[in-house]
Image (tube, rainbow over all chains, first blue to last red; front, top):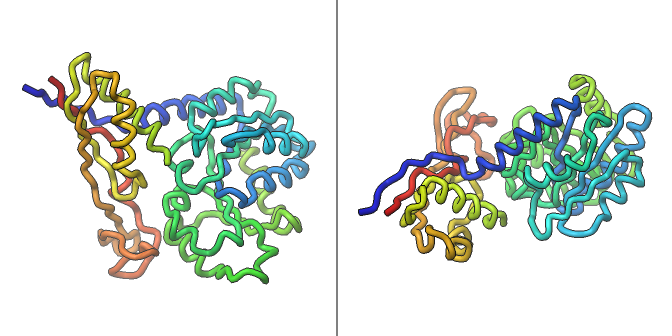
Length: 220
Length: 110
């Protein structure tokens, strides 16, 4: 005779618990940590490349790069001035999870840093489900992706703390309706702080850098 | 896309609660907004559970519809259409009351 055993346990419980552990480690070192997510090609690595030189002499920054293969992104981050750049190859997984970040943190002496930038795998679906233990989640949208992305990927747009809209220098050439895009964002994540930027021209980057600095100062 | 690690997690939780007994059924609750495909979970399940005491266990998915509550007029509603706005007053920015859950409710063992 089968017997019913009540469970009531979140399926991602193990990941969430490890994310809390990561957060405790990051907190105890006094570091502010962000998780940058976007589709492939939106400009995650480019923003990191533009951000690092602007934080030079102000903050000590470590970058953890998640990719399915290669160390191209970590190499770019190191070249742009990251004091440490760790590449995590997910071996086919479409997102970073708390276990992978845990392994990367083992390779860092966190006390040597003020800011930890985690660059997630390019994907607008899966990274939203896996907490890492960072303080803020950042979504990088970009003009050429199209203005319908909030409507198509609500899970991602709903859960982020800040939204960067990259490649705004292309707005004159691409039929991207900013009000339609922003209406979708507002419906899912009302009041989310938004930074329209261009990594190519440098437009808008100052506000993004100020926001990062404020958060790091608030942390220490 | 990330159904494989999720299926592994389902197996780990079920075996832990089964206490060595054979698992015959697993009851899962999945919110409408949880973005998971139960067919792929079932597909991975048949592969990863085959050498365990949960081999052949039936997976049951109970779907929970999404429910939003408007933060302006406080009406509750099921989101319709692409903008999730309140059908009563048109406001956006509702709170999600249900639809994001993904947990194991119970298992049957023998």
